[in-house]
Length: 113
Image (cartoon, rainbow, N blue to C red; front, side, top):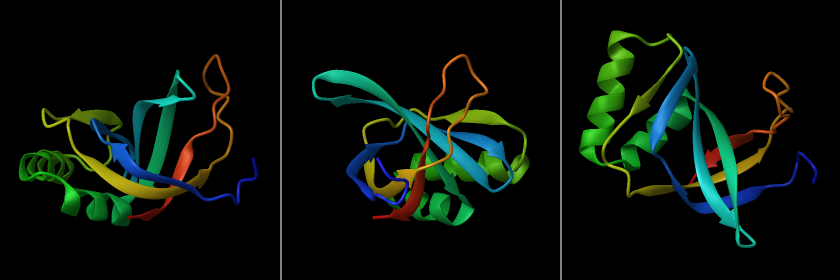
């Protein structure tokens, strides 16, 4: 698949936000594709995080904003209890990541829908 191909996910579940570094975030979700579970990693920036949080329940927004206010750049995952909500995203394939035992290609958010 070409890195220029738009992949549309009208209902992408957000269970937590991983802080990669200040201004760079990621999340991971398991989605079924053709009856098989697949792990999807989505990378996004501060502006996109703000757009996502505008769609989020208030408790999620308060948790993420509060934690980032206290520490905006330490790598970690911010989990929250409100798990049954979704947002839409247009994404493209990112650069292959070979830092783990397996090579994976993250999705990179292009637009929050």
